[in-house]
Length: 108
Image (cartoon, rainbow, N blue to C red; front, side, top):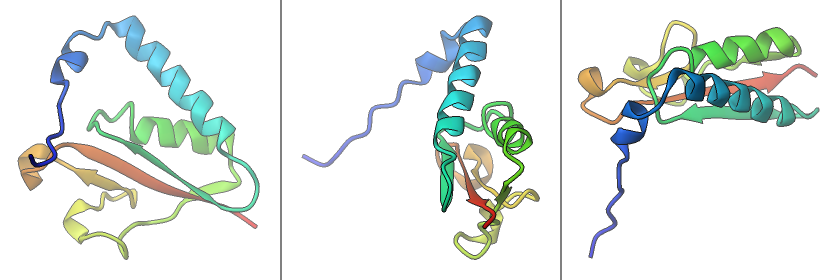
């Protein structure tokens, strides 16, 4: 039997505004704890929500100015790269599930 991924689109529909705020805070905490010296981190979601994606990256960069976005244009096709240099698959544009990824590098 081939691998079959289960989608839970209903989770997005059943989320309350308070849940989203709590999830944003949790995402910020996770990003902050991963920002250890000496490397890079990938922040990725299976969402196209700007607040959950670019919004979290921008908030992280404000808290951690020693990091910057490492543009992904050399890693993925250009149609998936935003003007901010991050990956975004759009269900309408790319006929794929929505996804986001940013590669963040720490200055030496």
